[in-house]
Image (tube, rainbow, N blue to C red; front, side, top):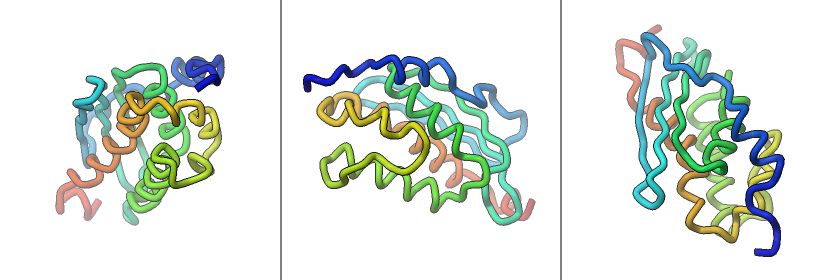
Length: 146
């Protein structure tokens, strides 16, 4: 745990979350909270015919690590399916649990490496992914035909 947790890169990411406005009529929306740390993320998504994200609206109330994780996700989410988001979340969760060597292949994910030994921050880091996946689950049959 000698590595700094809130690095300059984490803080830069935390203040640069793209898509920080709610969508007016999303196909799916979800709000998730962490019971561990109290972080909250709301995600709105619009989907293409093949169920890939075409628009994202995200609202984040979390520590700098949760915000940085949301920034990484929001930067990479366009064009991704639920399965692709779930795969990245699984890799990140595996890394945080010690089962994977790297947090994932998306740009800037390596900045989250210092958080591995800080279990109290893991829920906040995973929360943006959980919110987007819950928004996929919240899409209605009517919206799926868009």
